[in-house]
Image (cartoon, rainbow, N blue to C red):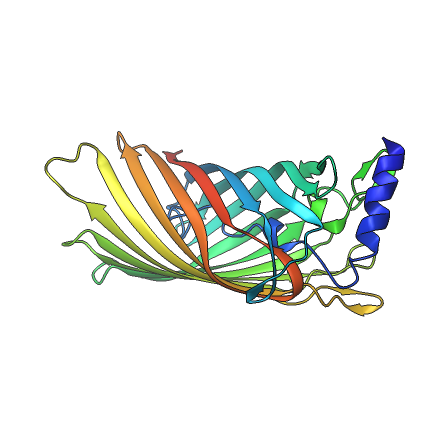
Length: 312
């Protein structure tokens, strides 16, 4: 088994200088919908838990498919929790925690050879502040500032060999997260409009590897489904999300096959059960992608979210 690991890493080393395969594992926007956009009331507690699956099996060069085939397919399974507490009416504390059940590459060998990493991702501890709350016009703006904190700065290894960056559950570096959220509601029609933006800035890890900054911007439209034949409290949410990532950097310079611009269409269906529990299913489908160099692209992602608020 150890010899086989060595072979895989020697093979990967011959192409990683010009071919990086991280794009499929760039997990963004894990909590779909609008549950976590605005500040909470004082002494309110919000729990959101979610499961996410991502899959990819095709390399891209720019916006064109590539015939590069080192990896047959890649996927990850991720579970996470977001905890929010209303410290004051305009100030909410949040903690975002997550765990990769697996991050797996299946190498295009004979027979196909899977290689996996797992573990806790970086957590984000943040403070969210309500900037504007206009109940008459149903218009709200909030923003947040958070610290990204790795659970470990030591890379994951298999049989004494360090896994590639793409299979690490966390880059092992600290960072900052800035977010802004805008919401406009139309109560008579049961419609809502959202605009969100998130900026991640990362520091260098102990292996002198630095992830590029990323900017995720989303536009949402949600509509409460009010049909006499439809049982239950259902809402449909349509999201367009643009994800921009800068190139990663090592001590030797920029890594060419990193960084991208991907546009997603993400429809979501939400069920509100007994005015207590939100259950929603979301699908991520890339509709445009431009990847620097040669990278493995996401084909689709699926998320299941559960959310509930408590008054303390």
